[in-house]
Amino acid sequence: MSARNPGMPLDLEWVSKVRVNTQAVLKRAQQIQGRNKNKKQWQAAWLLRAVTCIDLTTLAGDDTPGNVHRLCMKATQPVRYDLLKSMDMQDKGVTTAAVCVYPSRVADAVKSLKAANSSLPVASVATGFPAGQTSLKTRLEEVRMAVEDGAMEIDIVINRTLALTGQWEAMYEEVCQFREACGEAHMKSILAIGELGTYTNVYKASLVAMMAGSDFIKTSTGKESVNATYPVAIVMVRAIRDYFLKTGHKVGFKPAGGIRTAKESLVWLTLMKEELGDEWLSPRLFRLGASSLLADIERQVHTHTFQHTSHN
Image (cartoon, rainbow, N blue to C red; front, side):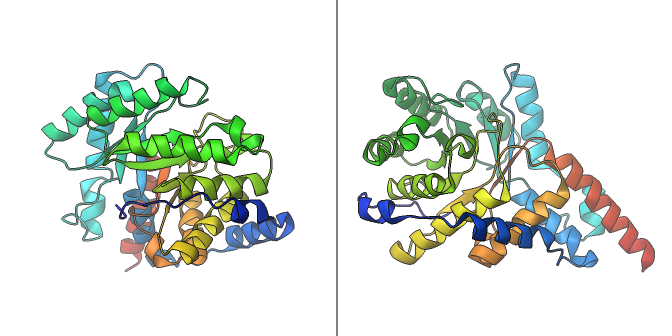
């Protein structure tokens, strides 16, 4: 993953000056969706790239050690061997980027991956996910416990109330405390964009989360009514770009919630490439939060690979 984001002192002047031009954002999002640059022969390679950026996730109330184990096995071998072989990718170590679970399932995931001799990181949602409405003490304790159990990445949720009421100092201080509780683990901050009201708020929350030391900013918990949308992504990745230009530090981006088709994953890769450049097209700086996306990608890889070989 990327070098840790050291964060910076809260720059309220910068935050207060933010104004997002909604029309320009919507227009840009439409342009990106209209692109289909990936020529057929590159499509399978792009889809494999998407696979390596997936945080394979299970966040269900009925999670058991058994289904967490199955998820871990899928993450270590996400694409069928015969498909990889047909693309000459069978010994390239294609895995997903991480496995993402609730804090109480971290130990199960760590154990399964260790038994499989895999160095895949376990990510855990924490801080009162998804609503973030428990006491600060409880939220911090949850982060520490997940890290103690072996989570190498923590997906925290910001307190939306603070963002909605413009209490940026309070939000910054909370996220700084989460950062500290993460220790050596990387921290992804979930903005829950469906609950932030305006694009300007999304941009401000993105900046404050990065200033407080987030290594990634993430759109959603997947539990809101509105999850990852392209216009919101444009706003967030532009905040990432501005933060990079000002501090020289690269922060990653993770859209999550409702991403189900291979075609959508290609749009996300295109968006990253065009807005932030090739460097952001790796799991170090880009993740897709998804639980059902992999099945569709595998289907599409199969279609492209076997159509392509039969035409040769």
